[in-house]
Amino acid sequence: MSTTPTASSPATRGDERLKGYRGTARAVLERFGVGVWSEVEIDSTRGQFRGLILPRSETADDKHIVLKIASGYNIGILAESITHMVERGRREAHYKIPEREFPTDPRKPNVMLFGTGGTIASRLDYRTGAVIPAFSPGELYGSVPELADICNLRTEKLFAVFSENMGPQQYITLARRIGEEIEKGTDGIVIGHGTDTMHHTAAILTFMVQNPPIPIIMVGSQRSSDRPSSDAAINLICAVKAAAEGDIAEVLVCMFGPTSDEYNLLHRGTRVRKMHSSYRSTFRTLSDIPVAMISPTKLTHLRQDYRRRRKDRNVIINTAFEEKVTILYYYPNMQPDIVDAIVEKGYRGIVIAGTGLGHVNKPLYPAIRRAVAAGVHIFMTVQTLWGYCGMYVYDTGRDLMDLGIVPASNMLPEVAYMKLCWVLGQTDDRDEVRRLMLTPVSDEITDREPYNGYLVYQGGIPEVQEFLRQIRR
Image (cartoon, rainbow, N blue to C red; front, top):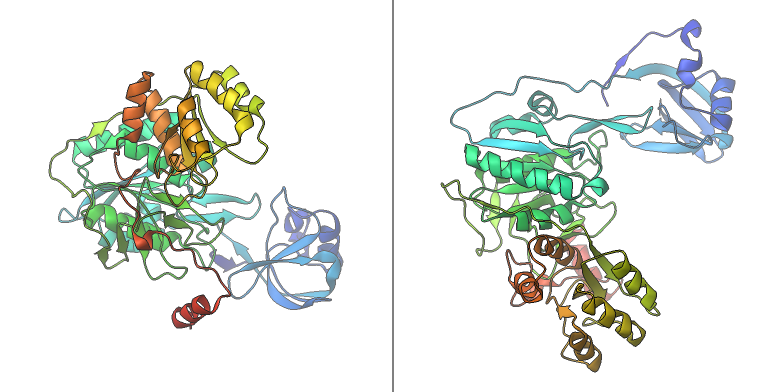
């Protein structure tokens, strides 16, 4: 947040200085004669604090005062705990994104950055709680000048939606625009995307945009750019470098590798999943290893079985999508009327995330039989996320296959969902649906899982604690 000193006087300290504050918090600010953008010292029953009073979101509660402290972090102080507060100065935020003309160099590669609504570079508007995105080339250059050292950057905002609102309309538009940019001769494509459903979009783009000759890199940020711990800049730099200079011509997700800002990882779009709600290193390749590590200065391949960048402009764009598909996460005592309701609502496909090797309870069997008889295509995945669907091992699995459920090997549930949407957008023939679902496009099904493709450390046990002592100093 950039701030500049501004003069203030009692005459200008009206309601504007209390904007966003209500109830107890407002009363406390009024009692001590301070307001928004006041630099204050606070005594409270919970300690002493010093910082800048920030506006509250208009939808926030009326019990806390928000302070930006010297470290750059924001804290909330319970208003009723404050015993004394004195103003030591005043600063006011200015939210305009710095903008400089993005330099071009004919010797550098050309990269297109598509925006979907994710806030890869932004400033926070504390009044509303919304973010002001930096998106034009000039704004991005002003915010992340290192980008000009990598490429000639163009940008296009395709959508302005939260990632949970991404759907087939956006997927299809995005896939088609990618195809057009490839045809134009663009050297690499970056897609700014919210992190919550980035792995869903990465999966569907892998099926809709096949055999691309250039890298297609998805990127987002877990923490906004005004936070000291933001991952936005390094994520964007690494994604643009992968798109401009990398030789991996696939749909990839580029996000933090470790919890510190040492490097990013490039994850294949069909094997990646968001695994933590707030960690910057939230994305993991499951049942395999990432394709590469990338830093602002270096790309290191972790595997060699990737599709290489090509000079041709050939790509297969297939934007088929059937919306009447769902994921059914099985749990003990699930009732058969859930399956019946899905069928009654006209759904054509169901992906089940089953227990263990791919199991559900016996009371569901009649409903499954009715669904298959009605023409619904049902595929089984495992809710363990790691591992294969092994429905030949127990009677339960074999019985379910006899009912018409097809095991989807080691496809992740969300990937199987996206692929079934794509497949059913093309055909309803049962044999062809099965063939397309079980024919790998880009590692959504693998022949084996490597020994280091399953790593989930359990804290507290001696060998893990010893390992952590070696890497966390």
